[in-house]
Image 1 (tube, rainbow over the protein chains, first blue to last red):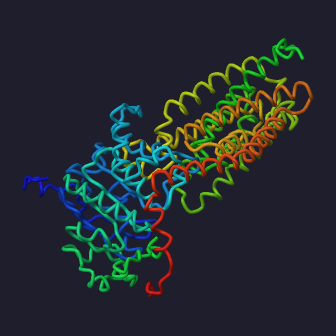
Image 2 (image 1 turned 90 degrees about the vertical axis):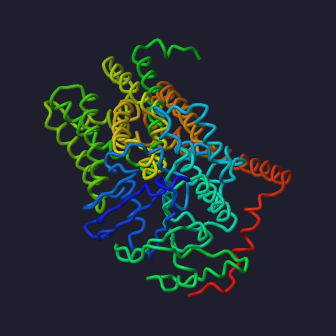
Image 3 (image 1 turned 60 degrees about the horizontal axis):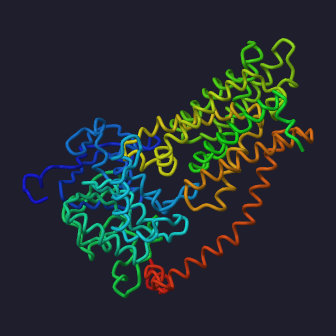
Length: 261
Length: 304
């Protein structure tokens, strides 16, 4: 977005949100705002509540207190889901039955399709989403035949199929090979350049670092830091940091992310 | 061989019921397999026994009574899945065995009833498929086909990834309930032909067999329904000529189809791999695939 006043519109706004999982408090009143056109990273150690925070936004985890708004509408009354693209935390795009890449990505278009009928423009949008992540040539292949990084690219294509204004991604880089990480970073860069707002759950900033406008760090369900992203050197200071050296990536060795799942 | 088999009204009814079961059971089963609840059909089958028993006790149609009770049981199971996260399996087990015990209890309470009446429902029986049964089966099968084909994209999305489906604005809970109810209806459709104890096999095994050959969901659906129809007609005809129980024959044929397709699948997969390799060689290999292996070698630098 270019207009300045639009830049200030919050697309996601959480105010003192609390949530429990099995009567254990996971979020203890967090505030989180993503403005239009902004890329916000949600950081924190395992168990700090990052994923739960994102799941309250999409309604998968019920909140016990506080307010959540999407595009200025309280989440309970929000119906315009085609504006939101979501990449859940997954290591696979496959289910219990074989499905082609196109079939999986087409699910992402349902928010724009009436009664689940896919028209010509919907099919074109699915093709476009596959081209964005560089999987157009694998469209007819079974997702079972893909590598881990390609699975993640399928999940992201599925989120992009509805041409969303807001992308919510839960650990999109977990367990992804270097080539796919670069494709994902490039895809995200294009989306951001086109004006998309992004909320990213990350374990570390990694190759997405240059894109990120702001970082919110959680610890034990509370916001510890909300501001400019911590520099690479400062990462060691993050609470519960795993001490995986991000600098290792510069030796042309991909950062192993197996610790992150 | 002539087609004298079709001269008997009971065989006509039995064959019609068998075809409908062959269509509906895999059509629902594919979504259960997709969401990794392959044994849900078995559980509902146990609950339906209580319905059969109640039908005898109250002298109502056992098919409709079983439908009502198994739909109720399916809704209850779905509710348990939502609210009782921790001990869900225990609650389900209670529902299964409670359903079976209820069936045996009610049928013995019924005037003149004994476990013998239950046997035809447990293992299927063709000669006892009545005119009313066929009407009920047709109506219920129409409902199942309407749901599983008409809502295939929505059900696919919810069964593939429930969390993502929520963000496409789909009514996830309603669709989950609908899947459970449709599975319950299918169990009662199949009850007269395959029997309650074997119904789950016809929901799951054709899908498993189809998976050996297919790469897409659409193809899996079509192949599993084709297998379902073939084995249920084959089993019914065999049981007429050889005087063997139809349910067991159908299930054994289905497993036979699974074994056959698995044997066929290995050479097919090899041919596909060769074709893919040829394409890759022509276009130049995918760099993503080539970069990974050297990158994965441990360097000793990544440590704690």
